[in-house]
Image (tube, rainbow, N blue to C red; front, side, top):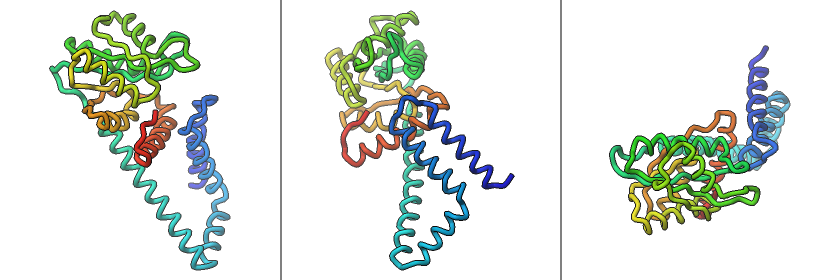
Length: 257
């Protein structure tokens, strides 16, 4: 078995990982499938690919410039993604201070029937662990009702927390939001109108904390992170999707879910 065969097997495995979330298709797994398929095709026809690039590079000055620009853009993209990942990891580790009352905003995601999805349950469990250790802290269950959902994400979260014997008086509902921006905007109104603790932590997946923190800063909120773990099989898809979301945020200065 040659090195090329090993690389092909690795690329095939990565390609399959991005197929895992199907039939649900999002920007993350769509881009991952396309990128891995291109890599697989290039590696499979490696000698032909090298010959093709060499022929273009030797054909004219214009072609050489195009190839050099393409190589620069690829290198810049790799560096950019590395920096994004580093910032995402740093943001996911910003734990709230110990021993001080805190408002935990639990960011909603998909609800199946009347129950939180596995991803949302992980967020709730992460928030619960912190809230049980800090009895002076409260939480806001934040999430509206999607077109394919029977109840709002906030209501599903409240039911889950109550099933875990959590004190209902420590739960506030925000059930109108449709995006991360609205999660934080409407939760800010609840915090101010109810004089809740001004130390704020967001309970969401680690990959989502950096963009959440940026959006919070735009709303003049300083947030800490209670980061839940994403299932490994879904992490690549959601991480790629988050790169795209962050890039869109930086380019347009708008708030994307």
